[in-house]
Image 1 (cartoon, rainbow, N blue to C red):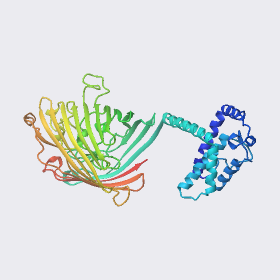
Image 2 (image 1 turned 120 degrees about the vertical axis):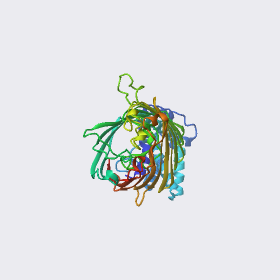
Image 3 (image 1 turned 45 degrees about the horizontal axis):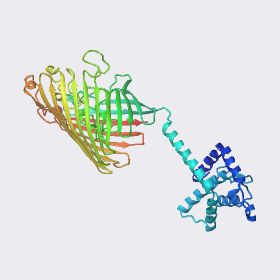
Image 4 (image 1 turned 90 degrees about the vertical axis):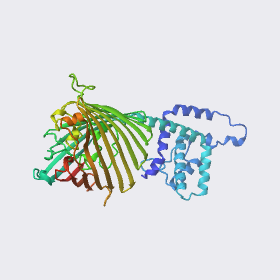
Length: 522
């Protein structure tokens, strides 16, 4: 059956259904019509079409509509697609069929299909004589459609979707003393996402992780891969998150496990942020200040100040939220808080202004998993640094898609840190990103990242007194990768990372890290 024709006669069935549901009322109205006086004119004794309680196969209206339906292929909705005559129809049934015929012929006219003038005149006459019934059906259909829309909006069956990503990678380190201390490795990571919705607008995400990534023997975190996960041969619960709206402008995030403050906002690095298919290094995925709080559970919100243009995001995470001991819990111990204003004046440009406050317990420092050892301000750099650390971090992130096949972006991050009862420190990082979407083939991605991983640029006298000096030199991070999309679900990404003066020290030889990442998504 032609789909367009079937859609046109949807009104026929709705009208018939309404008629059956209100048959007693209609019968009473029609009986009243039959009892109406016809006057004294002899011609008035011949009933007009509008006075008939039923439309019979021998009536001119019935024959006219049947002819129109057959001539212009108006499907009536019967299984064999025929217009079944040979039986009387109520005026409301007839009006429903007439409504479908009118709608279909109007569509033909809109598509420049020639309609005979005589047929148009017939339709106009039928419209006049069945005006009351057409109006009644239209009103009842509108009410039914409104009710159906209400039910669609308010009825939702709880559903859970399974999504997943599996990564196989082959990697190695070359150059410097570290090159000889590492071998070529094949490693893997698997993630399963169970996404449940209770209302159709909310989402509960439960992520399961499995990974066997042992880190390379390197002097710092600068060479960490962006997709490396080590669960020590066990399956672990990763993200546990519930997101729901409040009205049209507010989205609330409840984080129960393995969260970071970037969960509450846009890191403004769309081409590189995804660990499955984006950049190959940890540093290139986002501004390292997003990782500095040592916290993983809490609450946040995104408030859309101007629709699709300006949002204000904020949130709070605790690091020992499940520990009832003194100095721990949701509001004691390690924590982090974020506030970010995200500006999107066009669909090609986005900028973020970020502030992050963090507190780390003794020995934890500011561990972003990137940068030099000194920039962590932890006991790893010096035993004297086994003290609480407060961090106030500021970031500017931008991304501009100049064309469909080229985008430029980057960030600057600054952290003012205080080691309690010892001294102050300053940490900087920056990056420039170049993205080449659909390079050589639709779905592919080329990427280049050049930047400086977190560097300790200054310390106060108290820190210098215990040997915590600023980093002597500057290490530059250079990264290039090319993601080749084999299919919608499989991609291969070869990439290379070049670290000059590792650990921000020119006494260390340059390091090269090569990897081939294969990603399966489902």
